Amino acid sequence: MSEKNLIQSVERAARIFDCFDSLNLELSLSQISEKLNLNISTVHGIINTLVAHSYIDKDLDNGKYKLGIKFLLKGNIVSESLDFKKIGHPYLIDLTKKYNETTHLYSYRNGEIYCIDKIESPHTYLIMSSKAGGSLPMHAAASGKAILANLSSDQLDRYLNGYKFIPYTNKTIINRQQLIEDLRKTKNQGFGIEDEEIELGAYSISVAIMDVKNRVLGTISIVGPTIRMKEKEQEIFVDLLAAGNSISNSFGYFKK
Image: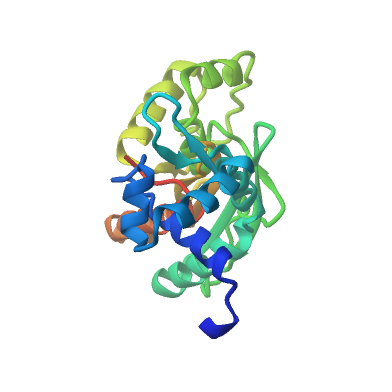
């Protein structure tokens, strides 16, 4: 759109919003006026309108202005409207193309993980537990561990209360203490690993996807035959973490 079609008052309001950032959380009327090179009376009129609609808040103690609660509310709407599958799918394509292994996006809902997207490996090897639409056991799957490792202590305690540790192979974690120790490692390294814990011969690596409220949305993972995966796992770790961080960034989450 050409600038001649812009509405001046709306354009000035947008410029006022842009005055605020992490280094300028609060600004006085004169500071905003100076930044915009507009006279104070003009800025004051626009500011008053924005304050009336809660897009700008005024600190009554120091008289300075800051972004209002409406931005938080609208930001949540934007975050919730983002399509997890649409954002994550290109990363699955890139990872499968580079490593020739099967990749997944898992969504975390009501204490369970469900596969919502999948790119198949060009190899004929079939991972039986790798199935779009299916769910996985939280204590055994790489994605389950990645999610549990990012829950708060209270959330994890509630989740594990009465949890049944079903053994799928002789490598499956079968008690709470083993799982807690594994989750500490998962949290520290930033990814979960499933080493033949659901299916002998299958090895999976997974990274949690977070949102702006520090909630776990799901995971991105890659799975393949154990021998082949372990030959390239260090490189996969780097790329999968980068993919997970990028997707999380899209939902407003930035690791501190």
